Structures are given as structure tokens and as C-alpha cells.
Image 1 (cartoon, rainbow, N blue to C red):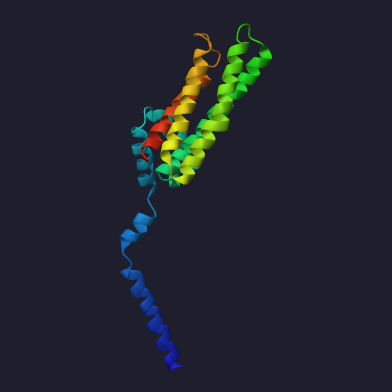
Image 2 (cartoon, rainbow, N blue to C red):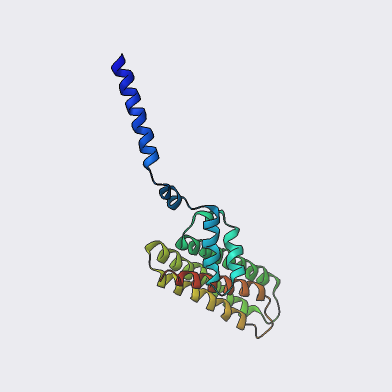
Length: 182
């Protein structure tokens, strides 16, 4: 019975010693604080052409608080997808209204937004998953260009200016963020 108490005391003291000997830096580097994550978001967004769009988009996503730069870029690709869907939905609504002289431009814009959703965004997603940021950057830049081309289809009288600007701006922010991974 005495040897069991001695063994228990010995194991308890060993456990205490082990806990004391673990460096405090281990827990800090493994679990970054909320301020450190916010700082990562701020520093990453400062390296993009539009800090406000970047910061607002990431702040609204709860996953950004635990993401590294690759994760932040993946979140921005999701924002791109949402903006592309918004643009395509508006195009579909406008096609039903039948705006005079806009049918051809709306059809062309629909093709461009479908290209973003079917080509550019999947390219960016796959490239980030595979650790190939150059192709992700290309996908984001292509999406920005498609939105700009859509806007130019209307010769200054676009009913999609807001959607095209949103798509363009989010895409160039995403491309700049991905460029940080190169």
C-alpha cells in the first residue's frame, strides 16, 4: 500500500515537472491571438489595391479569424463567386424586362459571367488547393477582365455598372492577395 502511494506521488510530481518545463512560446506560436489574426488580415489587405473591400469581405467571414494567407485568398475567391452569381442573376432579371437595345450586350455579359463561374473561379480554387498561386492569380485577373469587358458592351449606359465594378474590384483584390503567395 505504501509503495502504491509512493508511486502515485512520484507520477504526480513527474507530471507537474513536465507541465512546468513546456516552454510558453509553444502555446503562443501554436494558437495565435485574435489581435495577431486581425493583424494578418490588415497586413494582407494593405498589400491589395483596395484595403476597404478586402478588409470588409474578410471581416464578414468567420473563417478568416483562423486562416493563413492562403485561407484568406480562398475566402476572397468565395466572395468572387458570390459577386459573379449576383451579376448573372441581375442579367437574368434584365433579360426578362427586355431593355431596348440591350439584348445583345446582356447576352454577351451572361456569357462572361458564366465563364467566370465555370472557368475562372474553379481554376482559382483548384490552384490554391494545389499550392499553385500563379494559376489562381490568372483566374482572378481573368474574372476582373470579364467584368470590365461586360461593362464596355453597353457603351457607357450599362445597367450592370454596380455588379461589374463589384466583380472587378473583388477580383483584383483577390489577385493581389494571391500574388503575395508567389
